[in-house]
Each structure stands twice: as C-alpha cells, then as structure tokens.
Amino acid sequence: MATKGKGPKSDTGRPVLEWIMGALGLALTLAAVGLVLRDAHSRPSPPSLEVRMVEARPMGDQWVAEVEVSNRGDATAASVAVEGGTAPDVASATLDYAPGHGRERLSLVLPARPGPDTPFRIRGWSEP
Image (cartoon, rainbow, N blue to C red; front, side):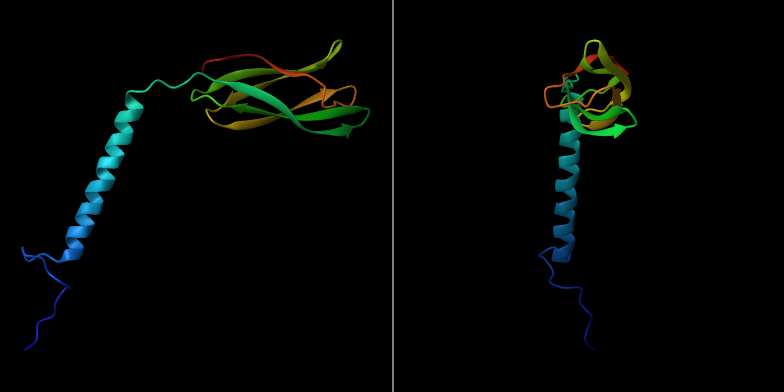
C-alpha cells in the first residue's frame, strides 16, 4: 500500500516547506523587532510646516482661498494658526492639527482674488 506524502522531506524528516515557512516567520519577526527598537531609540523631528494655496474660488463678492498645510516633520502640530493676504485685508484660520508627514486643507475668505504673489504664513502652533 502506498503512503501519502506531504512533499519532499529533509534529513530530519520534516517537510521542506515547513522549514521554509519557519525561516520566513523568523525573518519577519526579527524585522519587526528591529523596527520597534529603532523607533524606540530615535527622537522624532519637530514639526516643519509649510503652507501653499491650492485654489481660489469666488463666493459672492469675496474669494475663498483653499490652502494646504503640509508637515514634513515627524511630530504632530496642534492649533496651527494660518494667515493669508496683505494688510489691511488679512484672513486667518486655525487648523486643529497637522499630523507628522501629513497634509491638511483649510479655507481663508479674502475680499479680493488671491494671486500667486499673495502671502500665506504659519503664525504658530502648539504641541498636542
């Protein structure tokens, strides 16, 4: 009577696929432990915020400037104050948070159409 096999066997009698899967599991576990240890011993970089206008659209007799705040740092910034326009027509808004390596949008209402030379600035933020 023929016996059913589970594939080629190694010298120890275990299937080769079992050894391959065990090695793969070990490699993945060591990689995960390495990433956790690296993150545990590194300091996150502080927020690095930039703001740019994405689009402008009319709203009645005013203009809405859609701006994007990007954070190139690792740490999250909270209560990000954004300002745009020229004196005396300056608009401001507060973004709840800007996650590390993330992007968020907000809208500023201006009396005149914003152009490429309209300044937009980050005025400040706090740590969450």
